[in-house]
Image (cartoon, rainbow, N blue to C red; front, side, top):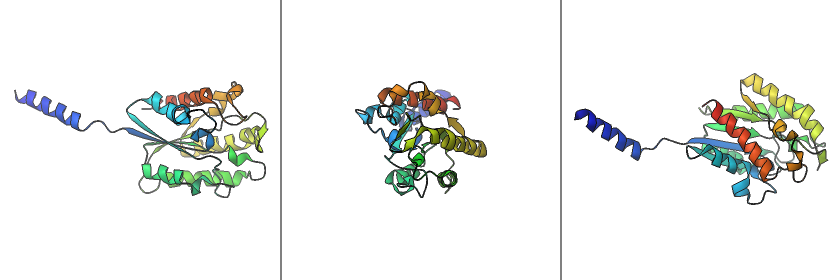
Length: 212
């Protein structure tokens, strides 16, 4: 009888104190925010990721259009409320996808990009935080748009992302490869449509759940 009472008490406590959700912060630019996607609050990649991961996860879209990783870029992500929100969330998992806007020909600087990326990683890990950090490569660009260009994505950004992942022991989600064979899903040469966002979300979901 005593054992039965303990079992009932444990069940009651579990019902009152449900398992905490795993929080995920999606840091990024307009591709993360969902620019150009119809019903982006449903069809953006973080929103589709939330649906794929299910009720045990809380996914926050911390994307801000036009932003750069570089602190000296034309619109640094660092200056945005979305970065403050990401830090305040103190997420269990942080997905970083910044670099597309950094490739604009008038501002790209490999040293600044790498330095700023290290600074962001260190900031995310400061104050006792210890999130699992996933680094994403940018998606492809169809040629060049707004001076954002595929050649700098491939030869500049991606090698730095991979090098930093090796340096810190982080995982890389290769979103470039995910959409490289599906460039028709880039609605304006830069931004994925809802189907492209779905492929991104699936790749991120697979990476998140692979090592749980």
